[in-house]
Image (cartoon, rainbow, N blue to C red; front, top):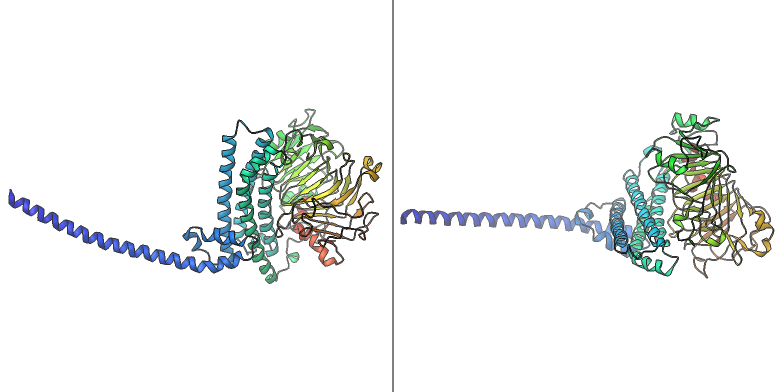
Length: 572
């Protein structure tokens, strides 16, 4: 027995030695491989640093930009070879931050459920909606960036740049909208403080991405030798159609009578009794225009067109007979965002011959008649009637023609790129000690391609204000946010407008960063000799500069207004 045992022990010792040798060799190989990988990653990271630093130098928050991007996983940083790659990585990190905010908001709702006020619950719901929309806009930005620069869908570089910037601008606006919901009461503000860091982090990350997009595209536009006005999609006048418009939609828009998909009738003679029911039943992601006719009647309801309901169109029987009305307001516990009688988010929305109304009255403070966050949306022969905050042009690109907008304080406000043409804009009688403000534009970053343009409109007063206009001051606007931008051009301004024209928000806030301008206005209130003396107010005298704010340039109107079937002017 001793001999076999010795043989076994000897063999076992040999196996141990061989195993040890193999392990050492393998370990050395792995260490060598890991070292090589680390060297490669370190080299790639070092190579990316100058590109990142150069791109970040164009932003408003360069330290955040560089630290966030440099701290990204090595595998992601190693793929950075160009400014476009830096933007892509920045967007990825921003999306992660937005997702983190989602869980923070959900946690607040869960842990504070029993102590939250009605408005706090509404505000947190608004924030969740803003998270959803922000993610959607950032994903769209990534998709658009992936094909940049290219003649995809016959887009010029300028058109691609405009789309990239408006999407990121909207994502930024969403962060502030979330926080704005907590600015009404002391208790609200405690929740605001808890959300502030996360929301502003996303805002600043978006701002950096926007600055880098602008820096990249500005250079490319300068090199772009193709004039996009000469492309096939150009509309030289209002009688031509974009080539990309389907034959079916073209026939629809040329028809003297439009056949709706469904009809809403309060008297029961249609497919639905309420507008909200018709919207709920409409298809999601429709590639063609889906038309909802709303017969004459007063519809007391709140209607929301969510983001998946795209290409919807409301057609009323007339602005004086088809009326959608509500009365939500801030005093009774709503948020400004949620107070809207009708809220539209789904892209490509159109409406004509309808009144959108909020009857809460001047004592109820913010009470929105219509809120729009729908890209490439347009309204024709519609009335928006309320008092404070009548028309909320929240975000993205919008167009209004032959509409009536009436209100008191900040009654056209928001941070869309919005053009109003041939509209009647009327101040109403406010509460005692209130001033009327036609606009309160909410641009909060100098790189956002947003603003309110009032062109070829009539700015006046309703009969109740005319009778006492000497008792109430009315101004063209005031700066809601730091880079507020409003242009009034080729419009008739009545003497209801104070000779100073514009008014401050609070002390000197935004007076050195806003941009307010007037161009070729007429009427008793159009004299600019006594306008405010701010360095940021300008009387435009050059037609070339005024062209910047036309529908063609400000909202890329030549690419989509023809598909609405509504009248419009692309130039001056």
